[in-house]
Length: 470
Image (cartoon, rainbow, N blue to C red; front, side, top):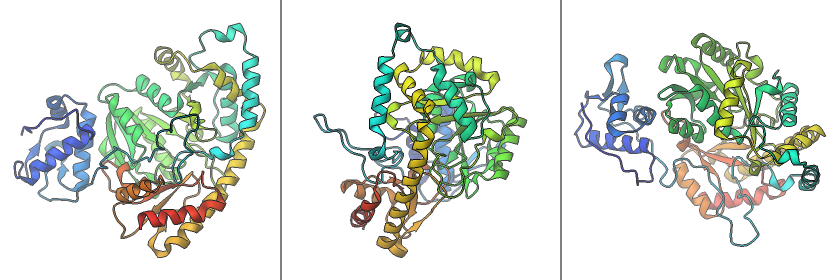
């Protein structure tokens, strides 16, 4: 059958949500009857002039609601079941609460309580960083003013390779390391080198929304793969897209659930990639911060078939304004990634790279990480205790072994997006869990960043949250 509707590019909702809403409306009004076969994602994408992955995401959302059923070669069928609509956030496609715009003048707003993804900016060694910055600036010579190496400063690449060998068990050489504009820069390089229009890519569901959005923007066909207590369900990914070109995973501390990918799943994922000739991008965004036992080994350290690309960032261990990260690629791919880096960025600013390299060369990085791990452990315990005292049986905190945020569920409470709105009105910035999924219901809850809440302020800050959300 042909679906008779158009999309409105001026709407705030993403295109996949518009498609899902129009199909849902057609089912509800009887224009599409139970048992009807919907157009293939390829056909509907061509009709609407959108990427196929956009239609796939819409169909996956409807399937998660129970409105449609995918039956392999028989196509996608209207189920006849109303299902439970998975609501979208009204004002943003993903609910990472952002700090408000800076007020006029030199002062900038401090991080909001419970904002996720930020290190403890109040405890960063600014004086040490300033001294290193002054020294790096004074040491600049005329040769340093030329175009930077597209792969990154040689000293920094060497330091990253040495650090990963010691801290993450990754054996690599400096010429396998590329310095990027954070994780998004690494993902852009991976997309440019490894993916072509329409290539299927596994993404965790729930997962980091900017990963999915970046892949869809590049024309990939995103395949949401369910997360459970052992991490990404490899068998589900294989059943849905056995020849996917790439899988993007957060195995050490899954975002947003915090679970770790179990060893059997890690081995299964590596075996799938080897058998299918596929690639894995490991986003190791905050593995340094583990509070129970030793940090888990990276997936890359288990990789014997050279199928894993490893992305890290300085945003979580230092500060986000650096906008620098790194990507470790298999040796066979290094020339292709270097060519892509030349075409896309022509390299990153040299001064910041010199400062980070000096920070690492002088041993400051491991000391800083140890100090922050201790600090975060204390702040995590304080916030957790305050939440339990304030909310009692009304809260269920899913404590995991590491990370920089807590996942708190409020059984019987209002929609988590509504709780976020109430908290935001009180100057707090938790994030909603439910909007981070595409096809698989993960329930509702709040992501609560604790890294910027001093232990002495935990009780007062949690009390503000309790008043705000009721």
